Image (cartoon, rainbow, N blue to C red; front, top):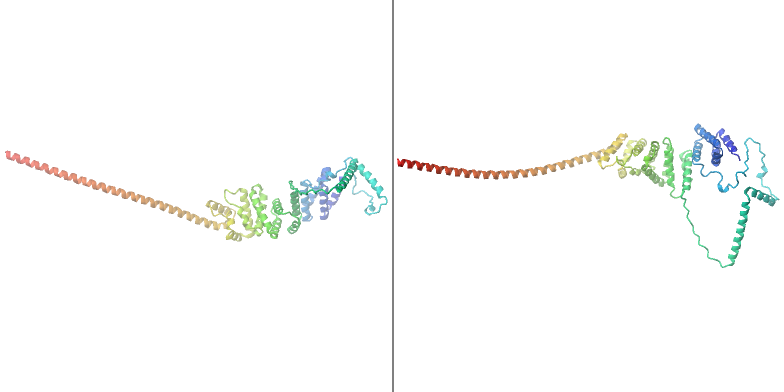
Length: 459
């Protein structure tokens, strides 16, 4: 058929669009869109522009709108899996092909009798005619290959007859070989199926029902959780549809709750790679799951709130996460949740108790984002630690002063004893000198008296 017939059919279906006509057009474009894009790129572009216009008008159902979005995503992937006639079936050359140029407005002679089975008395003759036409179309190679195949079959039959006459040989051992797909084609197809199911569903209940019908291999459940987070991050604003769908999966099976915990760890470790809009959507997505207790609060153990272990992106993520939790739960209930004794070991990263540098950073962080009410316990802990630090310093200073006073007193006693010994020695020496002086003065006076007496006697 000529490509104009396909374009006319799509135009007819999309002229006055309804839900049914748009769905038929979508399925038709999925089958022949690759060929139309190759043969008539302008016509294909016009059809997709009409789809875009219908999507912007918004007069059709939400489910049909999601199907149109899925068609655009399928076109972006290059119509993978629907790329025309496979090479092994493309047997007729282009020069030998007969193209039927038929329009929807042409008057056609319908042979309704061909739809009814009739007995053909000349069946063998007609089969011979058909085989001749087949040879003309496909060439003589097919006939020669058929002859070779028949000869091989005869040889096999003769060989089997000869082997049946001989003794039965031992059967060769059969070995099974496991084939692993290194291209991950099946995984890509699974992700595409999950994405289209999510985007084409009317509400989260329908999406959950359809996703549960998908046959998943063991270990592929993580793909559902990952695709939910990825689809949510691609939206312009946070859509509650994804949070409700993830919440439903977590309530159905605890396995999905643990899977979303793993996804939270991966997302937070690579949060610096996301744009601000995607970062906000992901933070609100996990805040919804935490607020509804769909996943465990133990995932907060992956967060280490300090100046050294966080980046600007991670701080924005933590800010949006706790602000959204405060809006959904209220500050009082959130504070009670963060004050539970059984969960304190998981909250030490967000609200640390040591070192004091990280405690001050956490207090300043929550105060700056308007959640200072969550820091009451940290402030009390900080005051106690500061008082203990002051007491330690006071004890250290008192011990140092006592040791210095004891050393000074010992030095004073030593100096006083030395001074007393010096004074005693100086006293004894002075007394000795005074006595010697007195004795010398008395002896000189006696001599003077003797001299006076001798002078008087001479006279």
